[in-house]
Length: 151
Image (cartoon, rainbow, N blue to C red; front, side, top):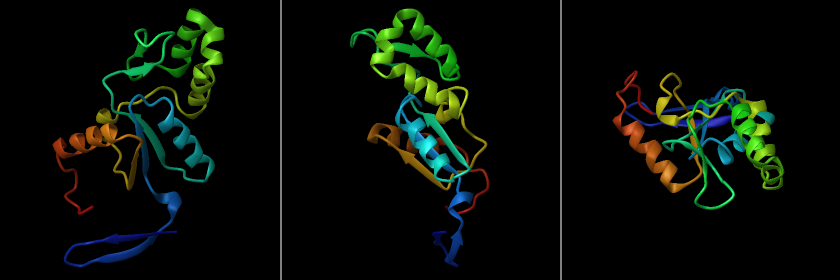
């Protein structure tokens, strides 16, 4: 169980089963860190896990710094993998990009954009970079309140 403390005029301390938490894992492109954490949390028994990216597009390394592979959020991982196989399968296997995409496809269909998620209220959001945290926080500050409950 996880200890939950809510502040306010009537502080409440409660035990919430960890498996009941809504958890978001957030990186820039919803490719590497957020998906690996998503998988690890599912494997650890957390059933309500989502992963997202905060960038404008999903970016994966190309053969040079100047030639990144850029995809829209929502492009299926299998489609991204097929595109990279067509470019240079051996290169993207050696650089572990294709195995990462294959792992991602076992977790969910496609990368999702944090700013597009409006249906889930999260108990815990894990960000993997300061700039990702800043983008997530900026988005939350501009959203209208859904239920006016204290955090």
